[in-house]
Image (cartoon, rainbow, N blue to C red):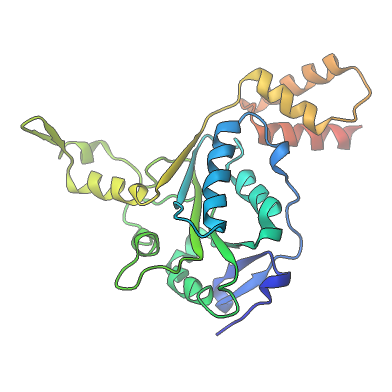
Length: 258
C-alpha cells in the first residue's frame, strides 16, 4: 500500500491510471482574506473545519451555486489556513469516484492517522444513468464499515441536487394525506445531496462586490481607479458574468496588456 510523507505533503491528487496519490508541489496560494462577498459561507466552513480538526463531530459539505463565485477557492484557502494545524487535502476527479474506497483505505493507515483529510471533489455532478454516485454515497454514509474519523468530504457543484432533475421524475410525486411523497427517481436525487450535512449556497456577485474584488487584485494600482472600474465592468459585460473569477481574468488580462 502506498504511503506518503504527510508531514511534508499538504495535498495530493489521485491518479487513477497509476492507482497512486501524486503529491502537490505547487499549492494555490489563495488566502481566506482575499475572498470577498462570501463572509457567511466562509464563517460556516471555518467553524465546520475547526470542529473537524479538534476531533469533534463535523459535516461533509456541499458548496453549490453559480460558477466563479469562490467555491473551490474557499476550500483551497482552508488548506493554507490550517495546514500547520494538521489539515491535509486529497483531490479526486469526477471520473475517478469509483476509487474512493481505495483512497479512503490509504488515509486509514498509521502514517496518515495523525492528520485530518479533506477529500475534495470539484465540480461534482452526474448525468442520467451515471452510477458513480453510488460509491460516493457509501463513503459519505458508510456501509458495513464506517468511514475513518480523519476523513471528510467537501464537494463543489453548480447543481444543488448533483443529479439532473427531469420533469418526468416529478410526475411520480403524489400527496398522501397532508404529506408530499416523492417518486423513486426524485428520492434518489435528493438522497445523495442529503448525505452532505452542511450545504453552502453561492450566488453571483453584485457590481459593488465585483469591483471590491477587482480592487483586491489591484491593491497597489496607482492609476485612475474610476477608469480601472470602467474597464473592469466592460470586461465583465463582454463575458456576461461579473464574478470573482471574472475579476481575476480581468486582472491577468489588464496586466498583460499593460
